[in-house]
Length: 556
Image (cartoon, rainbow, N blue to C red):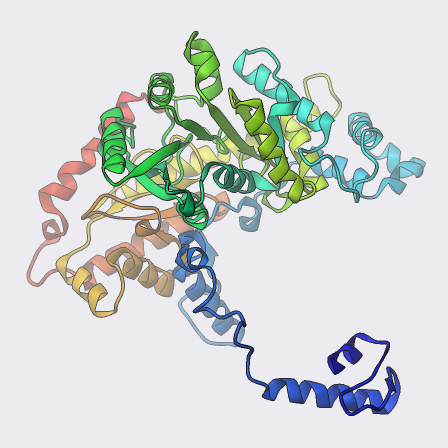
């Protein structure tokens, strides 16, 4: 009870003397109380790693895993003056564009600056310095909310949700949907977790729910499914055909899950793919919709990279394909689509703006989703505004349009060039095969590792791809993610790197990849063998597959 003294006020400590906060006696008592607390044993019911939530302990998120932890140690060593072959690490592990110097688009920042500091609008000189459409957009948002520092509706600002529905209608050529089906979120990840929480039933119900997830996958899905007591049901993408989706593989995964007593509630697909960079065709999307209708599960369309498309295959939304299929699919297939301001030309990860839209989800379920959203009170307001701006950018004729268009295209075209450069480089390296990066922000090459390298990895207590990535980090400062963190076919090894390092440094980054790989292959070459022993005909024989896939798509 006497620890209340630390919070202020007047208390009676155990020895009966009244003490009022303030003065030397109180300070001495505070010190004595803290010393006493340090000597007391933890209460029997205290929180420890042994008695905490098992699902939390089991969750893994490779994007910020052991390689990143090692990179942190290296950065600390560099800061203390330790000499290494490089002066800093390069975070190629995560799609965080502005951390790697992607320039923000000016228009959203200008509008948000006025909303965050509206006093600028009272200054004629400050107001005149900004384009008229920036001022008009800021005033429009401010007129439809109490204040940027206030909670909003739990689904997000109605005006921004209306902008989202209109954006979807323009993109897909479909009627404008209901704002009741749009939820603004703190990034797309929060929306994914919210939907998993709604879908997964508790173990004590006697039902074991699962979610179909592509392999390779983004680790958000495996971690979140586990947190909510679900089972991950993997379906492998076909690397040899450009990470295409094979419906027979999906059906087999469903059958295998049912034999294990798992009830498949939903199917995740990532389009464009992370980490694979593939774009799904309209035929593949229609097949998914048909399968979902047959099997009675919900489709989760992760479409956060829809603006990051570099090849000749365009992004097509699942909602657009579903609407084109007619009855009964258009009105019966349950779909949830996710998007974010964190990717594309904006790259505004720090604003944590996102949305999801429900299609054909029963109104009673939507109400339950709203209840979950209301527990969080509301999404952050700057992120909501950023989303509204992203889906309603300046148009031709607007004062800001020329600058916006120039900045937007400069980023998208630069990413396209970097995607081509790194793919070509990987495909010239010994024992490496890399499919084309048609979209998203990553390259996911397959590496052939010698027996000697795999034995060295086992001796170090590491998976072979983790061992390779750690060696790369220690030699070059490049921090990438082992393929095992995303899932990969048995007997194969990959790693994921972003294409985000600045273009004026990208040739140097590519050179670090190639020089490290050559040194690694030479160091761990199986005794007395030639270059062909690192895959030989199998490694080099498989390389034309990537080239053939590229030619078949008529890549520019």
